[in-house]
Length: 332
Image (tube, rainbow, N blue to C red):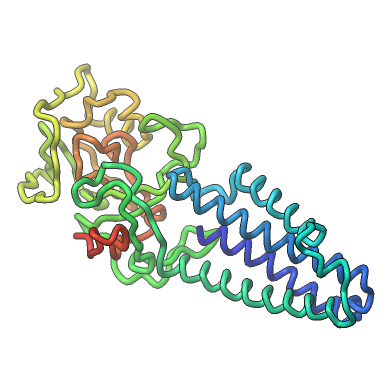
């Protein structure tokens, strides 16, 4: 969302910059040009509003893809809104632009400049805050029950694990490292929009899971119980199991090395289906990666199926549940 706000801010900032240049060159002394520029502002304002409103609705419906700047549907929505903004002065109920008094057009342009400045400052500041500090996130599924419920709205602390420098793989301002059992929000670890996992394409979507394995850890699951470096994790009080039966281990002559390779290339779920749910591994978590699982173990599509999560893809840690009111609180 922050990248989308940033580019909307750039669009509004471009209008603001050009307005200043046109003012210096006395372009607004020409009435036709002034009317044209007023329409341009209305179109830009309406485009920004329509585009962001479409993004918000897609986000609430779980259709947002964070790796993609804007979808075709969102752009079309913005363009339709821009057309309405452009023709707004011609609508029957907006007659002020048709019969202007002396100085009235200059007042409109002054308001346009003021709105451009306000919108530019607000959008750029919001994008910076969301990129560095906070992000809103909605729980899309029941994979984290009962820690989180479907529809819970969270604020995510994005600063805690560091801020990624745009267009690089480096992070700065890190407050601490990812710890075992941290709940993290991350982008799904795939760069291929055509790759299907968990019943569909997960490319660019944000997930929320709990960190079970750190870089270098050996992870194994036996009859639903997690073992980290050979030690059984008996104190997973957050884990929930809804099935009374356990799937057996996948058959065949699969060596540990072969399974490791399948897992790292996100093939374990495709090759072994639900047989990896209750009996998995052992695998060694690669350096710079993490093994994550949902708390609702029998209803979670996670690292058992699609492999480790690169550290670069981790966006932050849940800070607080802010909606619905009955669920407001700090998650554990």
